[in-house]
Each structure stands twice: as structure tokens, then as C-alpha cells.
Length: 138
Image (cartoon, rainbow, N blue to C red; front, side, top):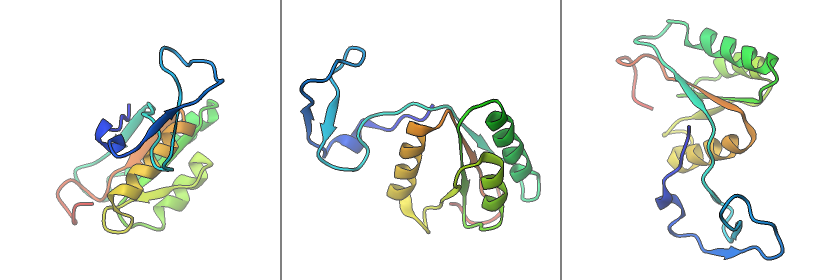
């Protein structure tokens, strides 16, 4: 499950929504910022391998297609700067594939992309970058 830390909301101001029914045991809130509004849970799987060329994209695409064929909404993310593999993954999942790269998009944008995906998806698949010991960390 992806759970975002409470520190992400520490600078946000909440105000209760009037006239709405309660969800579970807490009152829903509207946050005056457009950033992450509330914690969201969604199963997530990271596909990794000890080196490049080990089949991470193939496994990720197969998992995305399997879950999509079973009627689940799957969101796939790719770590690192890669522009060919996301096209394969996009076709398998039926949804846009974004890159989670600290240099290209930064931590805040990566966090936002995952947060939005957790709201709409039944499963999030994240394909790791290169291998564990080759290339630069992402």
C-alpha cells in the first residue's frame, strides 16, 4: 500500500465540508491547496532486477495486461529516463505511463503522480531503473 506521510499535509489548512454525509468515522475535508488532499491507499508492486536486460519491462507489461484483462485499472510508472519502455507499458496497461525520476521531474512531482494514481487505480506497478548496481540512482 502506498501511504503518504502526514508531514506532507502539515502546511495545509483544512476546513470541514458542511452538508455532506460522513465517510466512515471522519468528516470529509476540503483543502485549500491543490496538492495532496488526503491519504490514499492502493496496492503497489515494484519490479526490480539485479542488472539491466533481465526482463523487468516484460514482467511489468505482462502484469499490467493480466490485471487489465481481469477488469482492474492499472497505473504503471517507470523509474529513470527511458522513452521506449513506457510505450510498451502504456499499451499493456491502457493508461499513460509517467516517469518517476528525481532529476527529470523531482520528488514533489513524483509524489503527486503517485498520489493521483492511487485515487484512480486498483493497482500501481513501478518498474525499477536499470539494475541494483549499475547506472546512477534515480
